[in-house]
Image (cartoon, rainbow, N blue to C red; front, side, top):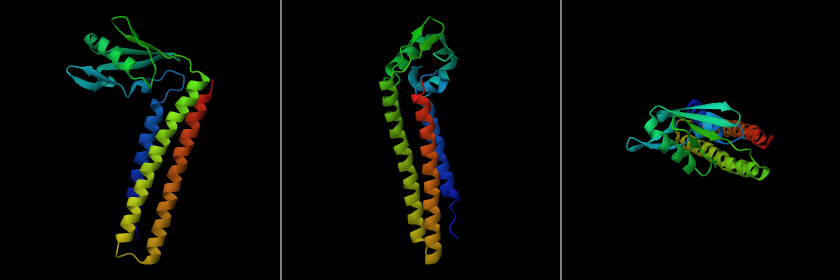
Length: 181
């Protein structure tokens, strides 16, 4: 019998990556994961923000970034400002960087949902690639009978549909969160 455990594991990883990507999407409320994609030039190389500073949500409209080394404060503020997809304007007081999260307009909310939908498509493409790899493995498996191959293909298709539905559900939930005022 053809084993789909490995394919399920790969698809779980795609879903986890997708959920992590969705955490980075702005919803109008301050969340430390919004800045998880920021790379800061510190100590002569680019480092993830969480390796040079602590990020906390002071309230629903403000993130506070506390650098581990005060000499990196300018680089942190510049890196946050440079990420145009976030549209944030940080301010530093010499000790911490305050990042006010502006309220989202209806137009900006729709734009964010549209951007998030590209992440949905990327996740679905990754799932389809896993399905195609599994189908190729089934076709070249000479020890399997035709009936077993057909059942295995159906199992892979069902698995792909299940994970596509998970992606859609996660996106629907995130879209509603973004569009909520």
